[in-house]
Amino acid sequence: MATKWLLATMALSLPVLAHAGDFRRPSEPMQDRQELRQDVRETRDDRHDLREVESLLARYDSARGRYARRDLMRVEQELRDYVAAELNESHRELAQDKREVRSSTREVRYDGHRRDDRQDRRDDVRDARQESRALRETRSIAQQLENLYGRMDGGSVQRKRMLMADLVQLARAEQAQNRQEVREDRREAREDSRWY
Image (cartoon, rainbow, N blue to C red; front, top):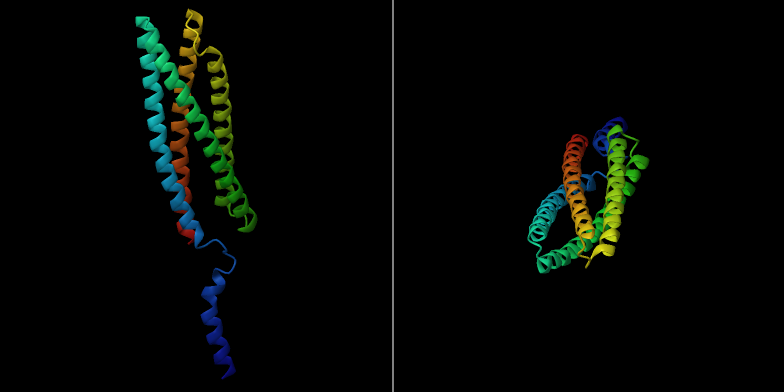
């Protein structure tokens, strides 16, 4: 009788013990879905940002070609607003990337050092570094533009145009980085679905 009881207890407890070391089982798929939703929002925002800065550059070139000082000043004000919004967005995204690095570090530390967790952490660290670099570049462009706003001499106008072209390149790089992050998050979700 005791042997049957012991066997029944063991049989019922095996499924529970199989996941005993898996502290994140319920939250991992939810986190993956949240990251994928965030990727969709960031992709949409990045497309909008690229269209906006390309439009600013095209309108600036048009006003410059017509020597339309009022139009140049209007585009300059919109450029100030765009740069301020980009700096705010970069700060938010960098903070999010740092949270993801901390989360990935915890997963590596507490989840038996699975290979995919280490890869996820490397990806998150790279994303944070890229976002930090983009923030530094945007801040540098903002500082240079600040010294040029309101100046309409030929050299200043040309320099502002070059800085706007740099902003277009940054927006394109951000879009490419976002596509890469979407691929990584989808891969991570697939890997996690195999475990859970």
